[in-house]
Length: 154
Image (cartoon, rainbow, N blue to C red):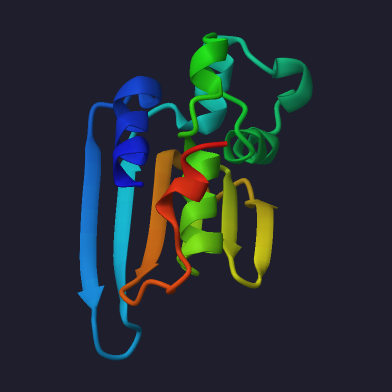
């Protein structure tokens, strides 16, 4: 899970810095919180740079965030787009498999996905993060029926 999201910094962000923070909350929340962030061009900027899906995205940062979370890659490598990794399978593994929480802030858009559902929000113009922040709440107690391979192989 972490490897895919960390690699996205070097492959897509064009940022100068990447950050990883974590904290373990073993008593009350029984979770590990992980934050991965960069100061790059944002998800929207990555699509613009690659020149992909611009007809769908137009100038909508929230739409770019939705596409990235649904598996629309900025890479022009059809065989790698179906390799079983990426944001979408990583998020599914966390939320559906482990019953965790996933949050993503990029540019002027925010995405939340947890056991209660999924939301995409366009932020007010005065709120903007030039780069991308991913927050994950990973439960310490793994569900008994969790099978890692269900989320890697399609």
